[in-house]
Image (cartoon, rainbow, N blue to C red; front, side):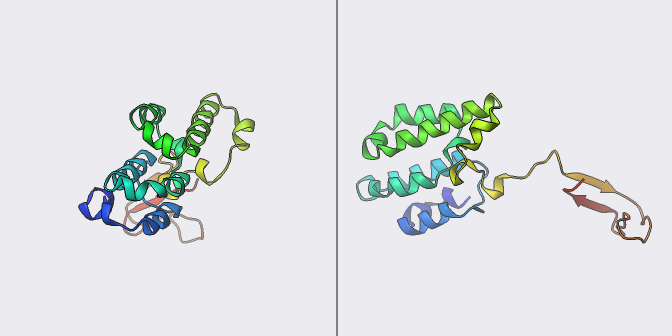
Length: 157
């Protein structure tokens, strides 16, 4: 992970912001994105706290586990003091998570925004991934399974 390298905390704020704005940012979880941003802020709190509103707006808060959100409020209250808008983002995350847990799809639609949409790199639905193995091939017509290598992966039905 790039965020684990010592050089990560030396990134210019504008570059970090551009990285966070990328929908295809490859991160295993949004909690790791949050941890990376906090590490970056902690490297120079006085000089970087002013970037918190911009950076905070790019974190997909609804996909950070609720326990982590609660710990953030308790353990990092100085961030709430520095950026009062963070409390609104956390409320949005809690509300989204509660509605998602209760299957309230109609109300969830009202909260749709880039922040409430998973990053593309976190969208793989392994339930839909299919694995086919074959020896040789079967048929030559379009749509027939034809895999001389013997292995095919697909995500469609």
